[in-house]
Image (cartoon, rainbow, N blue to C red; front, side):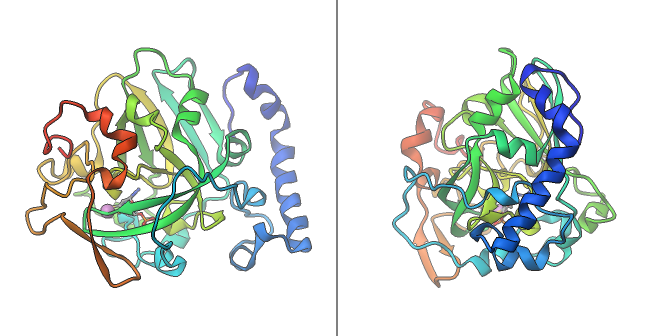
Amino acid sequence: MLVKNSRAWELPEAVATPESAYLNRRQLLQGMAAGTAAVGSGLMSSVSAFAAPPGADLYPFTRNETYKIQRALSDEQQVNTYNNFYEFGSHKKIYKAAQKLKTDDWTVAFDGLIEEPFEINVDDLLRQMPREERLYRHRCVEAWSMIVPWSGFSLKALVDFARPLSGATHVRFETFMDRYKAPGQRQSWFPWPYTEGLTMAEATNELAFISTGLYGKPLKNQNGAPIRLVVPWKYGFKSIKSIVRISFTDSQPATFWNTINDELYGFWANVNPDVPFPDWSQATEKLLGTGKHIPTRLYNGYGEFVSHLYDGMDADKIYF
Ligand SMILES: Nc1nc2c(c(=O)[nH]1)N[C@H]1C(S)=C(S)[C@@H](COP(=O)(O)O)O[C@H]1N2
Ligand SMILES: [Mo]
């Protein structure tokens, strides 16, 4: 656990750190003994006494009913076993390979244009953030989609916590780098580590979310444990997993897929049924687990929240 600066809000944390880390585990064990909902069967089987996921005792979070979806949630098993996570392979069945990643004691570094750089443990961070659960649609550029309950907190709360300077125009996110645990990262033609970016206006939009959990439990590795971005009006590749660094910049950051091919993967990447991929249309999507193909909606159906961010931009430009 590294807390490097001495801002007022961090002092008690810094002093109490080793102990509170121990306490969290002990509380978890007590919870297990009591058989609480937060430590149901999934956790018991995958977690040893000294490797509790960050904030494991805090789940489930209260659902924010603002974000309603008319359709049923996707099947949890499907969401846990059909993933994109190129660090572990360029196919959908990476969930076993992803278990190598150790996510229990994870820190995120904050730097760039902020008052003072710092690092914080995800467990400590979760205890200070306004925790909630949200139902969101999730649309991959490969034309499949899911409906999932994310646990976490608004990205705006995290941006405020980081205290960016007024000159910051963008936020850059970076995934871990570990060639031993993540064999995909040995493929040197990819621009590792995976990075993503948003404008400050996007990052502070109420929809932008940081997820630490799914289905009322801590995130599984394959879904981006212990902390990932969720921007539901954009294609899934923007929702970067397993974040280790968040930087505030004064220009548009380079991003993983956009660096690989900027004619396929736009920086904006807003879901747009009218901008096809070269080999397939984006007009419809396969709703996983249902056998249904449904129409794709502009901004993935979230136009009321975000369309003003792109006022005046051409239809194709909101993707590129
Ligand atoms: N670090 C990292 N983040 C990533 C990816 C990745 O390969 N590496 N894939 C992205 C893509 S293409 C999608 S569709 C979503 C998939 O999230 P899920 O597996 O939780 O459904 O994660 C995104 N975040
Ligand atoms: Mo994706």
